[in-house]
Image (cartoon, rainbow over all chains, first blue to last red; front, side, top):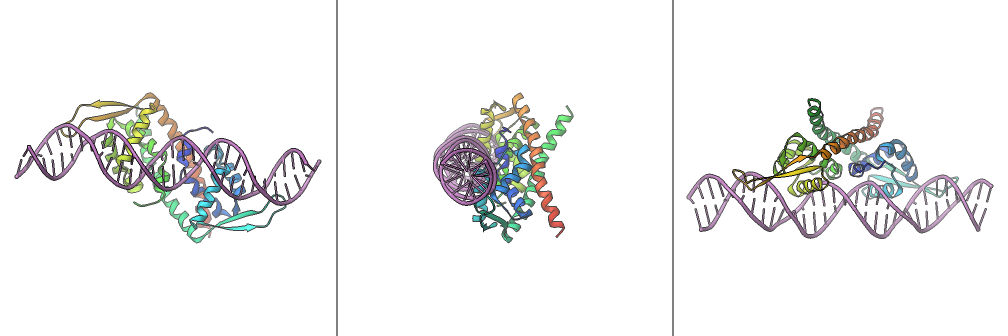
Length: 120
Length: 120
DNA sequence: AGCTGCTATTTAGTAACGCTAAACAGCATT
DNA sequence: AATGCTGTTTAGCGTTACTAAATAGCAGCT
């Protein structure tokens, strides 16, 4: 994908998406990146480490997720398993509420656009 | 509104919203700000001049809108009336297509979240 | 003339986010 | 020891929206 609008549209929603992902199960950075890309890359393009990890640090800094360091697995080094805090759950719920109001509001403009196009 | 997510969610979509507004009719900065706020302030918060005018310059610079300077009206100074160019119409159409794919993609995460919450 | 108020535009400086591009590290297999 | 996979970290960049102001024309009033 090389759509130039992606990057701006994504702003803010990536945080929400990561919170959603982590709410599904305890998981770690690399797995988050892999699953995120499976589910969104065709629309949002590939998310790289340099995008995802800083968001995780931000979320942890804000107290929305907490981290458990697991010992080194079969292959590869140790992982940091993230899960939502109570504050994270509450914040995610708020974000989703706002997202729904927000998209409803924007869609109103688009509906008018479509209506106008249809009557041409 | 003092919702801290607004600012990030807005990124990118404000451009699309302004293009939608201008596609509805030829209009000028001050009127855009007024109408935008009537239709979105309750959700997005108030958009100020410092937000809207730079976007208009950007859109003009990109060749998406064109400008016609009208003589001073009854009261107030002269206005700059904006309308979409052909490129602007094409771009708006693209942006809307992408917006729809994008929100569909994000909503998938939210749907899963809602489903998980419901079965608790 | 001067004042207020409304319309209308402009701009300097700031913070936040996602991106590019790379580096670093542990372990397994060859 | 070399390669490859898993996994994390970070520096520097460009874009966007925000705050906060300044500038300016015209109308009506005293």
